[in-house]
Length: 308
Ligand code: GYE
Image (cartoon, rainbow, N blue to C red):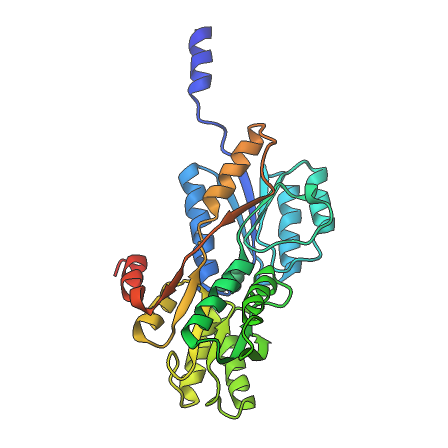
């Protein structure tokens, strides 16, 4: 019986772990896909996921992390809405000996031991890719409007940096106006309307560079309402690769996007399993990559993503 009990104990699945996930909010189609992907992956792995939607407010995210620490979860994942202000709550997680994985955006802390690793795309490279495509498309002759993401968010800071790095190599290309649309469709439309008015209607404009598809989709409506043809009079280049944007490219109202994978749950749970299993040789940064898509393949890519 002793041997049988011993054998049975090995046969039991590993005790289910509990992971707390402090998500930014649901401001964009991409983020909703990201949340759904993490929840599905947790379910598939039998992980008890505590999920919190902070409605894009950092104080809600910090409250969520505090409650995860109080519940003594096995690990915490944070998609930080902005880069600063994380040290105090990360110190509390470290005192409780709970590993923290940063997903998607980044945090700015001096001491990298405050978190286990960061799993994200290289947003600077995404900005470069978008700019390189636009310069090829326009021969480097282009007056550009920029819709920035959330102020202080890594995705906005880094995409702007990468885009400007490339545009700076072209004397006849430049960003003539830049404003935040907070990564949402509504704000993107509102800000685009204002920028077009400020530019006297926008006839001389060449392109819109948007830090995400959601704002671009709102801006496309504003371009149309201003009597211009989006995708033709004003080219539209963006990031994320959400289905609605593939649809817009297939309809000719948008031109290009750099895809950002929403599937960060798998790599995150893998690294948590490794850490909880004793592995201390974990890289500080795990980078995901995405391709640039244009109108040529948009209809087929839309069908692939929507099973249409
Ligand atoms: O591009 C946007 C979301 O942080 C990279 O946040 C992410 C961005 C993404 O609002 O759709």
